[in-house]
Every structure is written in C-alpha cells, then in structure tokens.
Amino acid sequence: MYKIFFLLLFIFISVNCRAQDTLLQKEQSEYVSISSQNDFYQYWLQSDRNFTNGIHITWASNVFNNKVADWLLIGMKSSTQKEFSLTIGQDMHTPQNAELYEVDSTDRPYAGLLYATYKKVTSNYWNTLRIESNLYLGVQGPAAGGGPTQNFMHSLFLENKDFNGWDNQIGNGLVLDMDVTVHKMLPLVGKLYETNVFAKAHIGTIYNYALTGIQFKFGKYNDTYYSKSGVKQKRPPKLSEQSRMSKARRRINEKRNLGNSFSDLLYSLNQVKQIYFFTEFQIGGLLYDGTAQGSLIQFQKSPYVLTSDQVDPLILNWVYGLNFNLNRWMFRYYRVVENDNFKNKDLFGWGEISIYYGL
Image (cartoon, rainbow, N blue to C red; front, side, top):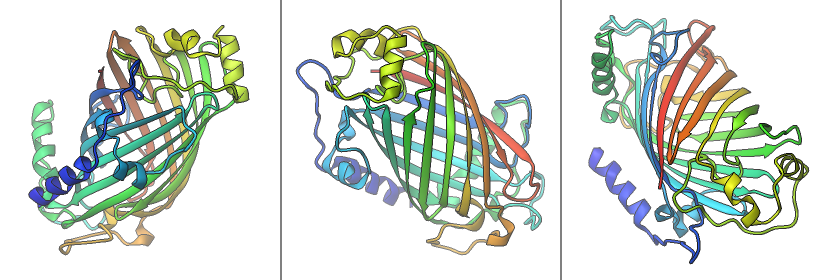
C-alpha cells in the first residue's frame, strides 16, 4: 500500500513540471514548514479524544506549478499571484478511553490517515480576494501507520502511555478529497488590524461538509492577499500591476500610507519583523465524517464504525493563534476549540506548533 501511494504521488507531481521564475522576481512565495498538532499543546481541554495527533510537512514552490495541478485545482483567472505547495500529512483520531483493548461501542472508533495534499492558492491583491483549493490523496486504516506514530509521540511526553485499541481501528480505505475556500477582506480595516470573511466546501471519501466564518488579525504582518503564509522571502515574488481596487484595499493602503505601485508596496509586503494575533469563528454543517464512519471507498471491513444518526451535523469552531518572525523564520501557535460531534456533545480542543522557513 505504501509503494502504491508514493508511486501515485511521484507521477502526480512529475507531469509537465515547469518553473515560472521571471527575470526579476519569482511569481510565488516559497517556503518549507513542519507542523505538529496535539491536544497536549494547550492548557484547557487536554483530552485524548477525537483528533488527538497529527504531523504535516509542506514545501511551497514553483516546482509544483504544472498543467495537471492547475487544471485539477480551482482558482481565479485574474489573479495577481498563483501559489502551489505539496504537503505530506498523517492524522490520528481516537476514542477517549486509551486503556481498552476491545471495541468501545459507546464512543467513536480509532482512525488513522496518511495522505498528500496538493494546494493551489490564487490571490488578487488589489481586489482583496483569495481562493484556495486542495486535493487530498492517500490511505485510511492500518496502512496509514497511525497507531505506531501516536504511541511513539506519547513516549516523548510525560504521559508515556500507549493507546491499546488501535487493532480495532477503521479498516483500510481510500482518501480522495477536495476542498475549496474563498476569502474576502471587509472594509473594516486599519493600520494594525483587518477583517476577513470566508466560506469553505469539502467533498470526498473522508469528509463532506461546508462552513463559513469571520477572521480578525491584529498586529504587524505581511499582507494577507500578497502571500498566504506571510513568510519573509529572500527574493520577493512579483506582483502584477492593477488599477482597480476593492474598497477594503483602498482603505487599508491609505491607513498604512502606501502607494499603488509594486515599488511603493514592496517593503510592507515582505517585512522582516512580524508579530500578530488572529482569531476566527466558524459555523457549518457536517454531512459525512469518514474518520468515524469509514471511507466511502473501503478496501477492507472495519471492526466498528458509527452510523449517520450517531454523528452531530453541527460544526462550531473557535480558532486563535499567534505568529512572529525572525528574519526568514516564522513561528506559529494555533489552537482550535470544537464542538464534539460524537459521544459527549461538549467541547474539545487541540493545538498546533508550526515552524516555517522562507526560501
């Protein structure tokens, strides 16, 4: 299974690969990052249940800008920038009781995912609009190696305890998902703050849901609609000139005393020193959760899965975090508080620690 997964991944990223460097600047932000998610990275709501552990390694580069990816993934035709990235990720989902060896029919099942994510981001700086699309390809089940990874991670912390029920995890199945998110800046902006709204739809063999929300940013940061990640670049990307601006862009440029040409904007778009706080609120509806109900394309039977009437369709999330930069290094702490869609119908949470390096 691992060999098939990586063979498909290699074929996908190798077809019609073409760099798009200009004579002056590259056309997209480039960076590498590693992110670790764990319920241990928080003070409140520490509990090993639902999504409990994950690790993701990302490389954003023109290398991944190819005709196949550009055709498969959704974006704007009139964008000022186009960015591509590849992420390798592994996620682990567990019930609350780690000691049970047998199936716990009163809680959600174990589930592990191993997948690659191909991302396309198109941004229109002047109109303060961004569209992100992701294509996920991988495996669910024992082939994803979730149990050994989680128990290894637990051995690194003070808990030093194993989860004993991984033999009862959801069986092997296909991960083939896609999502699209649209972001738009509102005119509620200032020199050190901005407001964005967004909507997201996700379909596939694992997740099917839709949500919308609002985000606030406070502090000093590289422009949200110039570089998605905001990582300081060694060679800043090129920005297309455009006279038409949204009300939010015109207002925020005036408040920050910026001009309307690339040369005027460059310093503010690629700052060395950044520190900012962000928070967002999300609401939506969940149609299917393969981490509890199994992939829609299963390769083997599962010992235990939930039925649709055992899954709460309401999505309520609160997200907040802090970013800061040191030269081309960026560090981020990110926390998610969610409503429990399964057994307890209350809140649970997890945190993420990420390190980025701008190329």
